Image 1 (cartoon, rainbow, N blue to C red):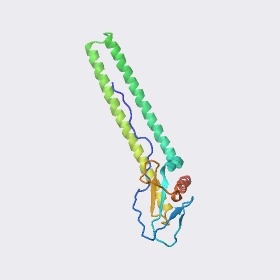
Image 2: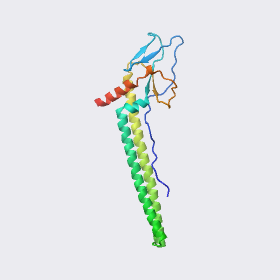
Image 3: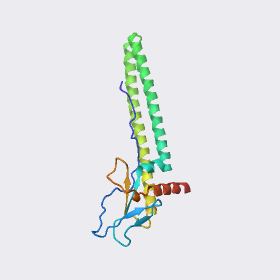
Image 4: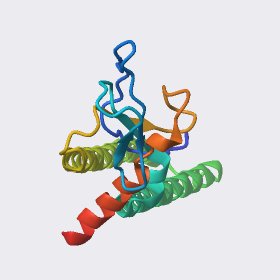
Length: 204
């Protein structure tokens, strides 16, 4: 009898803003923008025209954004509960199958009883597989809902955060999984974004 396990997605669920790379600067009119710890932009060439950019480190957001940590813990707890339930169901089915095999080996079952027991075991195995699929689907729907909620929170916050339009682009960055090969840490606004997200949630 094959093992029945729940397969669900792991790890992080954040998709932070649109990751675009279309930064173009006019020749001879480049501007160097920096962001201090409060997220304010400074310019090395006042009055010049250029693209103003900043980035947010997603690993730091996941580590310090309280809402994300809380919801992630809830999802992990739900996944563990599902795994435990399915494993318990599987053990019960395996024990029943072992009991059937023991009785069959000892000639304790008639042919009709043996056939009925086999059909029952097959039916229970199929039911367990359907249950596994349903629980997996429910978990993925719950995870998708969390992703959508988180995306909306981030989008809404960034609109307010950048209401003065000091940035043309806000990139997302993740170590080892980003299209950005180099980052100027003076453009890092992660701390300001995390502080703002946590503060906004605390006021609700």
